[in-house]
Image 1 (cartoon, rainbow over the protein chains, first blue to last red):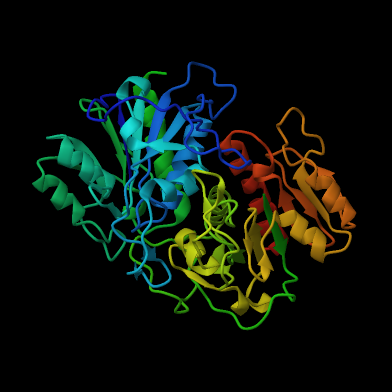
Image 2 (image 1 turned 45 degrees about the vertical axis):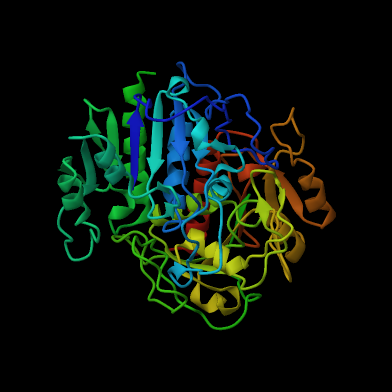
Amino acid sequence: MAAARALGLSRLAAASAPLSGRLRPHPPRGRTPLPRAALHGSAPRPAARVALVLSGCGVYDGTEIHEASAILVHLSRGGAEVQIFAPDVPQMHVIDHTKGQPSESETRNVLTESARIARGKIADLATLSAANHDAAIFPGGFGAAKNLLCCIAPVLAAKVLRGVEVTVGHEQEEGGKWPYAGTAEAIKALGAKHCVKGVAEAHVDLKNKVVTTPAFMCETALHHIYDGIGAMVKKVLELTGK
Amino acid sequence: MAAARALGLSRLAAASAPLSGRLRPHPPRGRTPLPRAALHGSAPRPAARVALVLSGCGVYDGTEIHEASAILVHLSRGGAEVQIFAPDVPQMHVIDHTKGQPSESETRNVLTESARIARGKIADLATLSAANHDAAIFPGGFGAAKNLLCCIAPVLAAKVLRGVEVTVGHEQEEGGKWPYAGTAEAIKALGAKHCVKGVAEAHVDLKNKVVTTPAFMCETALHHIYDGIGAMVKKVLELTGK
């Protein structure tokens, strides 16, 4: 599940750590702040400045890898400037994906694991500042970090924005196509409005400037999820007005 | 760098472990063989059966995450049936991507880490059988596994197929756009033919049935790399004749 919020990042703290959103083939240079670079070198208008917030590397550990990668591809095509952030905290658990359960003895750091997706171009979430970005995108995932829950993102929006409109797809399981359909009820219980959408669609809450798409909440082919994330990114970039 | 070989998997050993290429939102069920599922539910013709061979999770550890994800999206759109494999061996090193250098004390297993990208639907490379697949795709990455080198994939093809035609992009650095341009010389030194291609192109060696694309050998925006991988996957699926 991927969700995005344009503007209004005042809840997010502190100074900015500019970071290249461009994924480079050479070894990363660590956490040193780097100048921003447009993901698309020939953007026809001023590039939207987008923060991508990761929470690990692998669904159930944190960020769902394919959602994060799809977001970066669509932001690149949209000519955005991207900075990638993650919290510098221990993971709550480390999933052994071959078994589908946590490895009891293992511990990993959320920022360090997120850097695998960011190819090293990543900064501590604590340095994220609304003043430096037009939008922030929170890919989904079911992982949890100690002191920071990084859960299915629209639920996070519902938790912090009273009355926000979000989508996690359909509200009935429909024979297993929507295995997390019950999430819509949890969203309503938080005082938010759930809007039914297909996997290739995105919902825009214009008042709160929140864009959501079902992504992996739907049991479907990967390219449909990729397309839904593309619809979300397109709406986010439209909301930035750039 | 992503490279693909259609047919001719006789070098790869043993019985098949069928595996769903579909990325599921629920927890993985471990290494138990599962029936194949088309990534596209309504493929208009018999689906090509494609093996995707991973070598870890993160460039310099092994598989470049964004290359692997793009391959899966394009295979999904192309209606392929995908099985994902990785060698069940220790990684040579574990990269701290925030520092761009190995973590001395850490050890990880290539198959277990690859399962983060496969979302658990993965089998030991030793069980891969040519008889069960129309093509195999080897995403690039600079990682190495003890007993199995998983290097920039076209070099691997050049190593095992005398006289094969491959591309790693351009043969001059061009001011840093092609930082690994020297790889072309290494390919020629192995007796293979290097064909100059752009990042959004793929080269097809019809005789050896090998398809290659530069991918991250080029310093460019991510969506151009995604498009080049799309061109490669399209040619691979054409070569399967399905």
